[in-house]
Length: 84
Image 1: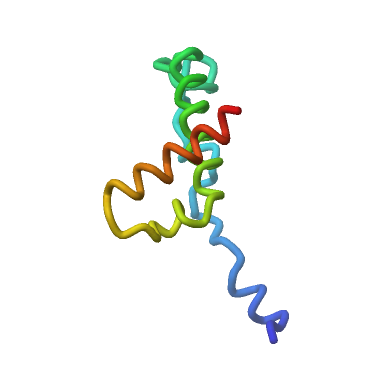
Image 2: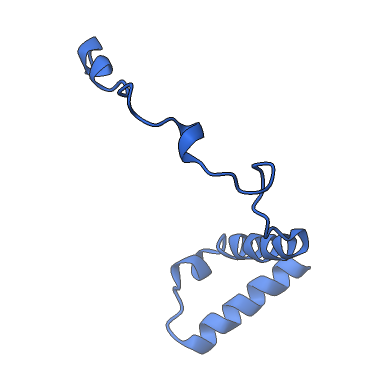
């Protein structure tokens, strides 16, 4: 069980750099990186969400099918069900 002495030993040293001094600005105002493209990000997000939905199928997530053809058939069926 932690004690007060443990908490005191975990305090940062006064010479440790703060987050504000270690993080560099990503853009001109410190926000997104200058190479951010909204349309590319949107397409990437659609693909990632599709993979996330496909992984909800237990057979796809665990690669239960032994052959490439049966796994491809399972992916196709799952994709059709998601599309409908």
